[in-house]
Image 1: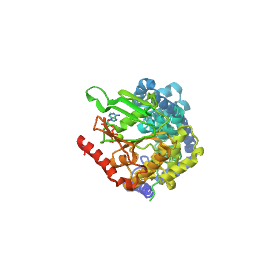
Image 2: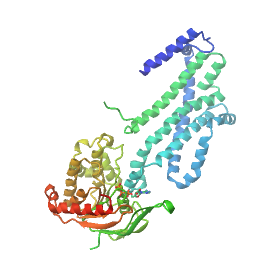
Image 3: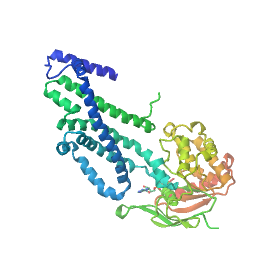
Length: 247
Length: 255
Ligand SMILES: Nc1ncnc2c1ncn2[C@@H]1O[C@H](COP(=O)(O)OP(=O)(O)OP(=O)(O)O)[C@@H](O)[C@H]1O
Ligand SMILES: [Mg+2]
């Protein structure tokens, strides 16, 4: 079904350009995108690698820092009253607006992009982790307490598995944000990467190559999202959203 | 001998100010070691609240609860509690859920294999031990939760409507099993139920609780021989006890 839908979409795209006589420098048919993109494949692959590194580094650092912070805020009433309101306020700030600043401070290199990807990923993960670790059902927390289990054992056997589904909401949301963050950071200032590529070829009136760049950016986003989804399948196969429908 | 569980002027008020809700008490009550005491009362009269207070999971607003002569000031860990809403976790199988109780207590599931098997068999869940809770019917989940609450063989059990979601036939069967377990090991049981018949069939004493705020005004001592099977249940004495309880509830205007 969905394959047929994709095929129809690309066919309409292909032939509407002919039917409506749209000039090549505005929109190109997918067949041309494929052939011209293939001609430039070396550059596209290299830039995909560059952007991929930014995305993966920023995302990984966000996960590594955001989870413990979310955990700490969920369990500490002091942090809840001090850091939590601050985190919520910062979440309201459009992080991407900082991109020009970071680039002016840190130059065109890898670091400012990683920081921007990190920023757009960090907050959804923190907020979902806080929610995840502070919403154990009253019955389950009473049950755990009544066994006399210490905090660590309760955490490993009850709190952590109970929190994972909500954590993954944050991980997935962040995975969607990550490539957007990287691309925009590259638009603003860089000399390589897919965002840079799309901007340059668009300036050169080459929508065919711009679409090829968008295609690779999409693949990158899907790959990251797919990895996170795979991890989710492996870690919480029992969750209601992942149960296999049996007929 | 001192009573095992002693309540003195125990009450619970939720909230404060004009919105405060007087949920339970004040109640004085003694439960002796090895007794099977049912808490029988209308919905919302504070039965679950009382159970949580005895378990040390909810602080009374007034009065004092003692277990074995010690004042209950925090969670009691040497009892078995079956909560009204089941505490099965979705990421473990039925067997895994039962073992969760053991693991949280630092006991080895391997060392308790036989008793878990026996418990599963007693509630007819052997064939479902590798299934996840969502694959079970409501009644099966409740039976699994029953095993989870009792696998560590506590000498005192607090059971909050353990048979509430069961169909009439299974309910009868599990009642018989519970009674057999009590006859065999004589744990002290505090048992919450809405069913007058069930309370009288199982209990040595039935504490009748008034509508909210719940008070214990009458305790019926049920003087019938165990095991109380179908024959006992159709005896005139049994029916007499049921009548007596019904009369009391009629007096409260809940029947
Ligand atoms: N955490 C709470 N906050 C406020 N009110 C509560 C709370 N828990 C219980 N109550 C109130 O206390 C009263 C007694 O509740 P409880 O759950 O003990 O009733 P119950 O006798 O177990 O009822 P049921 O048979 O329906 O389970 C109810 O009116 C309920 O609304
Ligand atoms: Mg209740």
